[in-house]
Length: 256
Image (cartoon, rainbow, N blue to C red; front, side):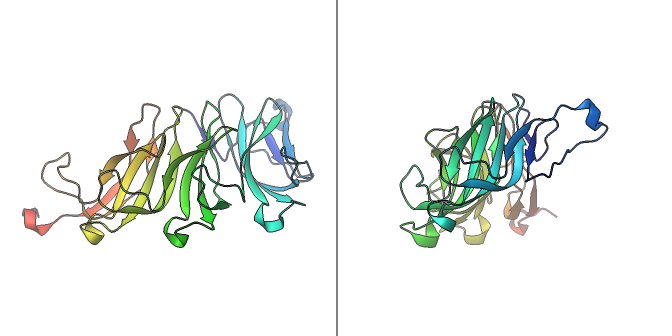
């Protein structure tokens, strides 16, 4: 897996007449520049024009995904942002603010920076509005490639081990197999603050638990994760997940 975020070497997004080249040790004369998208360009779905761009991601095939703000849209500030991908000069809409998620509950409100893999799949975190559970189910993680979106995780979804429900989702990462790993906070757990964080991986809404605060046994067979602080994960193409953890050892185990 080789996913490059926020760095473009020979493909550029342009803001009006403003161009930026990121990198070091490369002269402008040695680089062939290609404009990917331009302010004022019409959205591929015909609804509005691009007005601003942020956080481009590029893969080894030269595909570029980016977050964009739009003007002159049909619904004003209700549909004025989206995530798009450029492939062979063609701009494709991945997701649009105001669009319904695949599970049909609510509409997309705020979209994160995109993640892009070598297959051209894009993953993102989203906040939603108008959901049935209001603030109990208004965050989700999704993956798409220009057609139907796939839900990976949703706030309010039950943990795969049955202990609590997802209440916050952050730090998603995407591999070339289309798997997404992420950190989650949970509510309604049996251990309260002692088991309310975890790391999960999924290719769809069926999740695999990688690690859980309070989990036992752990690799050293002595300590367990209590009152732990768990980092956002990293993910490779084989589906292996890495993370860091800061933990406090339970005195009941007699470990000093």
